[in-house]
Image (cartoon, rainbow, N blue to C red; front, top):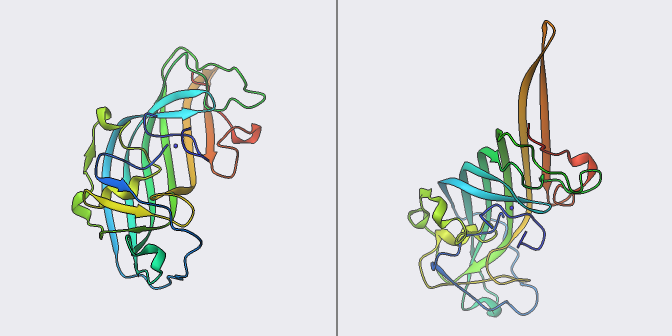
Length: 234
C-alpha cells in the first residue's frame, strides 16, 4: 500500500481504495459523531482478482502483485447525528489480500532504511508470496452498499484508478456521497503486509534453503526499520 498518509501504495501507485467514477466525495462532518454504533446490521463480502498491481516500498515501486482481495463491509445502522444527514448510513470495512509478488530487477529494494539505504534488487527476477490486510475507519454513505457493484476482476490497466485507500467505496452505486469524522470518504487507517521469497542452493552434499522476508505495516515505519527485513532478489 506512498500516496496514502501512513502507508506504502499497493495500487500502481497502496495500497488506496478505488475511485472509478463510482463515488463523489462528500463534505467532512464537523466535529465528532454522536453515534456509537455497536450492533452489526449485516455484512457484505466480495472478492476481486487483481493482476500485476504495482507495489511501492521505501523508494518507488519495487514489485508487482497478483492476488485475491476480499472486502468485508459491515453495515452499522443509520446515523441520527444531524451532521450526517446527507450521508447517514454507517459502515466499517476490512480487506484481506492473498497472492504473490514478482520483483523488478534493478529497482530499489522495498526496505530503504539503514542498513539497506540505496540497495538495488538483483538482476534475476524472483517471485514470492504476499499476504496482508487493511482496516478502515468508520465512514458514512448516502446510499447502501451492495456486493454487485464490486468487480470480480481488476485488470492491470485499471490499477491506478482504483487505490486501496478507498476500496470499500467500490461497493456503492455511482453518485454516492461519503463522509467521515476526520477525513472525506472511506479511509484506510491500519494495514499489515508480509512478503516471503525462498530459494535453494547446493553446498557439497547438502541443500540449503535461503529465505528473504519483508514486513510492511502501519506500526513499523512502513517497513523501513532494520528489523523489518528486506527482499534483495537473487
